[in-house]
Image (cartoon, helix red, strand yellow):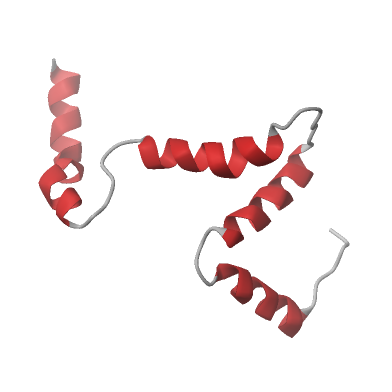
Length: 88
């Protein structure tokens, strides 16, 4: 019981669900789960696909850029400005 009381004392500010909803922010895990399905599962878990950590990370990084307004163009602006290296 003490650990539960301590948890609520430490996290009560994060439990203002009315305020969170008023700010149009999600209060459940559905948004995160949907993002995992759309961004990760659909791209990396197709039939016959096999990925290594580095390649999967690069593909997912680029994929997330396309799901955030303006980020894809921002990425290419930086590439055009600074170039890129294939050496790592």
